[in-house]
Image (cartoon, rainbow, N blue to C red):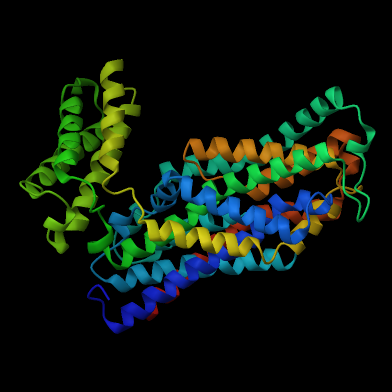
Length: 467
């Protein structure tokens, strides 16, 4: 298989299987949030709801692009972590996947709507931090802190935004919807009025679709990390992209950077400036007369990937620096060229996207009951009403959609759970929340990052010693 030894082929299959298991658990862990409202309010039968949600998750992954997926991949600078010993890459992937699966499955088992996004991010950061305990200096570059900071802000803000936005939407509902039944608890076994059902079907569909676009991409990112780590020669570069087209992009990037006044540059600016020039020269020389990745020797393909990463990241950092003087027109052109150059390394084969879509969709159809009960009955002292379910899902759909548009990973669980909390508070204040459940949910939220960081870091060091 792709020139791999039998042992590596077995490890590759094991890693791919674990990634599918993670996404499968993500389906019945996170997507249960989407179906909670329609099932709990009797707006849709459970079987129909999970099939409906699963199909829309599938569609979301297929149409979501790979922006979030690449955000996950770029949390760990692959050009640093993938070294000459491919088993080190296997150790990284196994530790990441096992720690994420253990925490996700554990919180699902206890019915806690914890965040798969936080779980994955924590596992990735744990591996990066574990590099500090390895011999040599590689640990200093093992975490992409700029990307981690951006991701952390997105995950931190989302629960508070969901809580506040749900309160606002509940007040909007009260202003325009005067039907008292809309604000009452569902009657067991009795369907709500058709307009209410249609609203809840629509909001459930939106959350499911955007969940697929955002969370589904995380699974795509995991698969790409596996493929790049174990088979960099085959998955470092998109073979369908013209190398000469990309070479034109990097030359324009280098020229735009070279026109800037370097007199105000500091140490960091000069470092990025020289990096862009160095890697542009190497990329242009290596791709001279070559049409696509298949024309490049297998040993050189990962080096070209490294060139593109260094060129685009260095140019982006210079663009953000206050010491770099560049016209508005040149800045716009530079952003365009950077985006075009990234296409060579930011990609996912269609089979990866379809595989993750299937795993996410199947997971949605199986393990939803535990989370649905927590969402519907245990967050508020009163059971969730139609209005509260709709407001929470509207908030979640908008939040996830915006995050996906900006290529930022966000927690469906946090958005929806905090939306339910906000809708409960909008009705009768903080006293309407069940303290025990809220405490457990918050505890799961708070512990997710440190637990997964320690778990993945420990497993990584163990696997590095074994493999």
